[in-house]
Amino acid sequence: MAERAFHPDEPGAAPAASSSPSDSASAHAISKRLLASIHDVHPGSIDAVERLSAQFERHLGGPRFAMLVVPDHWGQNPVAGNRVFKARLRAWADSGIEMFVHGWFHQDRSEHSGVAALKARHMTASEGEFLGLSEKEAAQRMRDGKALVEDAIGGPVAGFIAPAWLYGPGAMAALEKGGFALAEDHMKVWEPATGSVLAKGPVLTWASRSSARTASSLIAAALGRAFLHGLPTVRIAVHPGDITKQSIVDSIDRTLAAFASRRAIGRYADLLAR
Figure 1: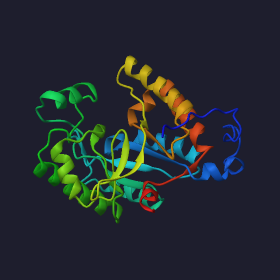
Figure 2 (figure 1 turned 120 degrees about the vertical axis):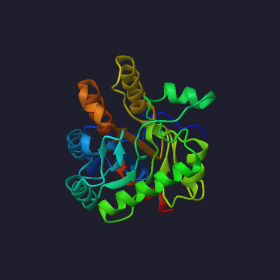
Figure 3 (figure 1 turned 90 degrees about the vertical axis):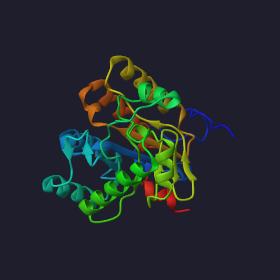
């Protein structure tokens, strides 16, 4: 059945965003959750991640979100050997932030053809690392990333999310056997070992690398604020580059406020409790 759009004046609608979270928590709203995440967390992005974390905490009431850690961003920002960054990761994890493995390089070094070439060219700026990998190579990077991040945080990771949310056949095969509890793409969150889909709906995110992409992402976020309230789970994802444009920062604020006041602030792990 199609999801119904949210209309603030209709009977039984959730309270307006100006209401406090405690006042707006109706029984209907409690059954819905908001999941938020910061992508591309690595030693070179720590200042931007700190700013985005503070923005999230203002709206979410604390460190109630996820971080996606890149083990060696573009081969220039290795987590291995960086004791200061690993200590920061552990402090974030100890505070309650969920940690995902987010590829290895976050850089696409594969040759593509056909549909994969179109995805690589138009859906990301050479960052769809797992789109063209063989199962063997994908599995190795997943294993190495999992071991590295788990060593840093002193506990299990929440799951694996491919850079740019792009997975090729090799990555999907490796992921099924990779020992990760959760995975995510643009349209869903699923359990890799079983293929069970745990949440459906588009993730709201922004693009900062060109004026045209920024404009389209601002429109998409506005449409999401208007029409995604019927979904049981809404996902919001931000990137370090988002802080470079005030229009995006403001849109993130509006989007967080629109959903955080109407639904429970969740964790990805909550999706497994069924």
